[in-house]
Amino acid sequence: MESGKLSDSIEFISCPVCNKEFRKAIIEEHVNKCLFLNTPERNVNCKRNSLHLKEISSHEKKIKLDTISSHNSPKTNKVSQSSKENPKQEITKEKGAPLAECMRPMKLDDIVGQAEAFGHGSMLHAMLEQKKIPNMILWGPPGCGKTSIANVVANICKEQNHMRFVKLSATMSGINDVKEIVKVAKNEIQFKRQTVLFMDEIHRFNKLQQDTFLPHVESGTITLIGATTENPSFSLNNALLSRCRVVVMQKLSVDDVMLILRRALIRNEVLITGPQESKKPKNDFIPRFIVQEESLRWLSEICDGDARIALGALELTLAARDSGKEIHIGGPTVLALEDIKNGIKRSHMLYDRQGEEHYNMISAIHKSIRASDDNAALYWTTRALHGGEDPMYIARRLIRAACEDIGLADHTALADAVACLQGCQHIGKPECDVLLVQCAVRLARAPKSTEVYAAMKRCQRNLVEAKGPLPPVPLHLRNATTKLMKEIGYGKGYNLLHKNESGLEYMPEGMEHVNFFQDDAPD
Image (cartoon, rainbow, N blue to C red; front, side, top):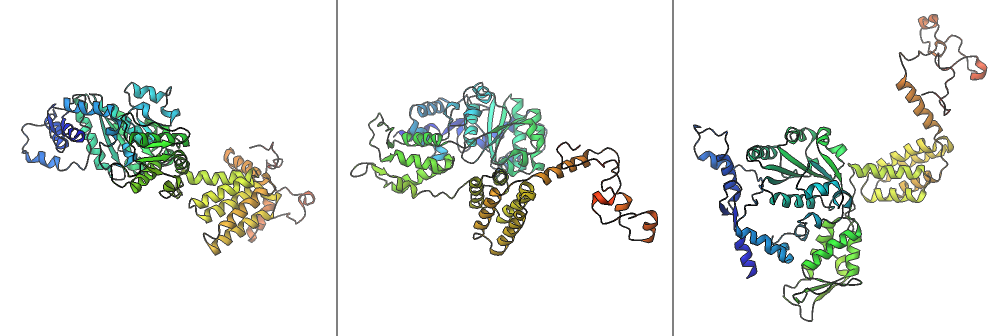
């Protein structure tokens, strides 16, 4: 009975332009027509007839408009009020929606984790509390809450007369969709309404396509919120980054994921047993499931900070054990640790072979070898292979480490690294994993000398910072291959004796006293 009232109450939504009520199914089509008819630039004498309006409505390209404003009808206000009173009703409002989607926060205080970026006392928290939304790029791993932040911003926009929220994804939308959004946003400015555009997976647009946002962000036509899992320094346009604040979001901690799982279970009236045993709901509802505390702890630890994976695994486990009856015979079903383990396997380790994580992992291997930490070198090499890194790339980096950090302190290290590369080429993966790990540990345990590497860097700086033309090669060091060259003096006086006995100078003129192997050598 209660669900029937809910469906009736959300059947009609008021238009933000004319304040008339329309059915939810046709509200988007009406808003497009209403905006077109209220545009001052429209030419009354235009030869186009009303068929042009139908053409516009059929060419919407799946643009989602935020049509809910503060001028909602009393029916709509009843829905929002009832959702606050009954949290379970808020979750089931989108029938068939995944649990992760239903658990998205509606208010700023509901955000879990990301205390440094959006917690109390942060600048962004203060701005959002004042209903001020800046241009920003949300950068973080999957499942850390980027889309949840956008959901909070969307609700802030719904509470304001002068704000409108539009959500797009670069995986499903193109530049033409962005242009349509901008076109509508320019019309909205005439009604003093600001458009907030959330572009998910913004790194999917190439840097030329990203230029489309620049003039409209700079002029204030739209407020851009982008979400990306890749390092913006590599994947986004520098001009766009200069106009947006980059918000770095971290993986959720185990406690953060535990809190999210607890909220999901409590709102679905599932009991949790353990050291912090939950109480029964106030309405004496008999729970269908009882989840053990250790099960939630294990799930929070195995999901690698991704709340979406944790909620998805929990939802899958609940659905698998649900018989469809209102109350199980013999009492609620207890979900043990083994039940949840069957719903998730650790095969989702975060690793991007072409993104920032790729370079971070290789850097960790190299620096562990440099510090002679054989245990860390073994761990990072194994983890890179487990994440799908190319073995040949790791082998090439080990050769570099053998030259750069070990150098002449152990002249066999380079030979071993080259042999490792050849071995990987011969046997391939996955059998080559032991070769790479063994070579990494061998290099970590080897004595270190950066003498040659440091001398090379000093020499390179000398060449870069040299003023005027570089000094020529001395005549006695030049190769005399023709009679003319010998007559000019090429190779004259050259001998095979040691430099201390030959009487010759092998450095260029003016650099006779420069020694790059000394720390005080001039750069």
